[in-house]
Image (cartoon, rainbow, N blue to C red; front, side, top):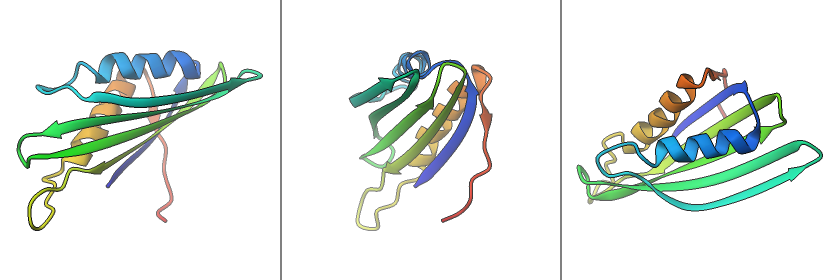
Length: 120
């Protein structure tokens, strides 16, 4: 499993649309948008997006779940890459980390900064 936590300027909706646009064109085999849930109330919102990508190198799928929270000034993006293991020993070859790293690259281009996270 791979996790990222980042913060930046902007709104929840515009950040979600930017992530979808950029992520859906990344890689030789682009990811698939599986589902999305969005709630906005009194200027505060949350957008939850689930992507899935097939990795040929190990013949399996990895998912990336992205939670975008905030208001019209500050936005927090949390991403969790999971799955991606295949074969008898469930070896992922880092596919979930690659997926999360792509999200980090996209957000860094928009000026987002990584947040320090506590280990659970």
